[in-house]
Image 1: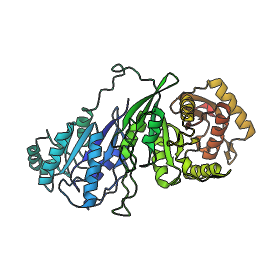
Image 2: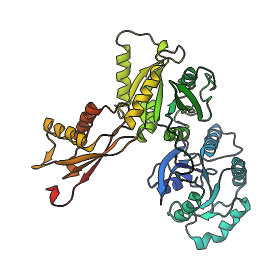
Image 3: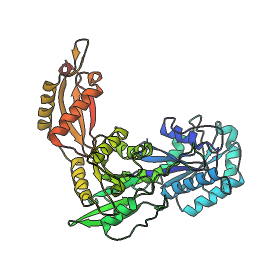
Image 4: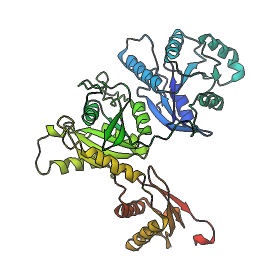
Length: 444
């Protein structure tokens, strides 16, 4: 089941980024006393007690502004509201109830989503208690006093928020074992066109206007008697034409789509080449351990020689160096070139994601690897790998029990990973390693 999504919204400068950082536990969002500093919507995976959820920080909502920047931030906040399961409506006790707060409250009521009203900057409950009562006028339920700066009241807030999370009962729905494939990428790279070509009909709107696909859409495609669920996502936005230093991405829609997927198709426009923005988008899937196919679309528009594909592949691998395991396919949604191979790659990558290796076989490969390349040592103290075992799939995850985990250098982990890949494949999926020290006499 996908994690619950929680969006923090409110007018500018109420402390949304400070609250986001306090809940996330690290300074991710920029915090500054200037309205409009949080220009990009930022997300973080969080946990509280036994609840896991995705938290979204939004730009402030200025309901009636004509400022292009603030108006665009409002649009981003509205997208976050549409996507969220629960909304934290943050107001400022020090500035009191404002007309903008009423207008934001009206917007949130229309969303018909659960809303938790949080009153920020309450550094002293005794001092500001009467001021908190003023916010009952918003008719948004009981206001929860918090101080993001002092980290006060966060537990009370999260208890109320988590009470609105969808039920996580494993019995409530049947497991959907159909392959789920998220199609992600920048705007106008051909994501919808790819699905339309696979589907054989124009069920998804296709336009040359970036951002036509507003919502994630599930499309079922039948191929060789197997149903594939394709999740089309809105493209992540390019650099703003309004402010050169402003980048605004519809990240959360991609995050939630990737979360639901088994395999991710990362679409790159061959005519534009691979970019830093492509790397940011691909990173969302990589961080979540999904199977990845890089589909280079519009390949029919490229003038080619016998080296073009290899050179293009090397450029992609350089930019996406953090995921060398990804599979590549050069396609054209317009002409149908190599489109039939997408299903083959999806099946192969999905198989790699769920592949399990018996502990005995795995340890034979590890033993052979340590003979080929001696484990690292420090001051006469050499790394010993006692045994390894696979503990999870999606992605395949392995625990290595050793005498000293400090000696398990990254380069040696990469060597072991390569040996495991040579033996078992694992094409298109990352492999996770966890290193544990064995305690007691056995560790000598």
